[in-house]
Length: 150
Image (cartoon, rainbow, N blue to C red; front, side):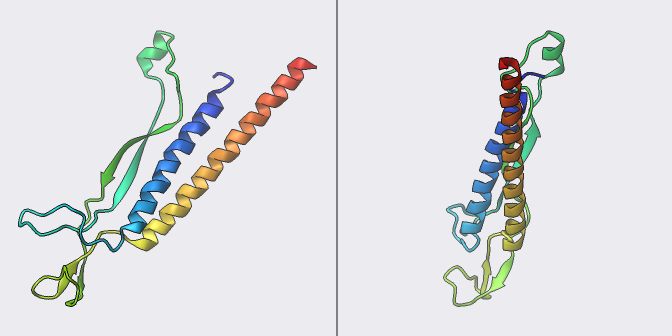
């Protein structure tokens, strides 16, 4: 484990959580968007579909360890994908809405504001934890330099 491994791990976490915060903000902003620009097979406009971020660990492969090679960021996390939430769209009765069907129902986005707020708090706390870990690592590096200097 190198001197900067902790900084690399925290940095990858900060980057990943920042993207997660952006995706959550986009979900919240589009919670009422009934026209996303996509259409179903019948040609009807589809509402916004909630997006979610999938993480995976970033670690050196077993083969590279055996060969003594190390990747630039050997540890941490990275965004594997941003995928659409497959849950169905809820229907809301609103016959006055311009996108309502013949029965007066509107297909709404599959975004649950409460779920998004919980995810927002979780991502924010994870971001803060990575900042704290980064600061602690930075402080340890400074102290190590002070020991070597004095």
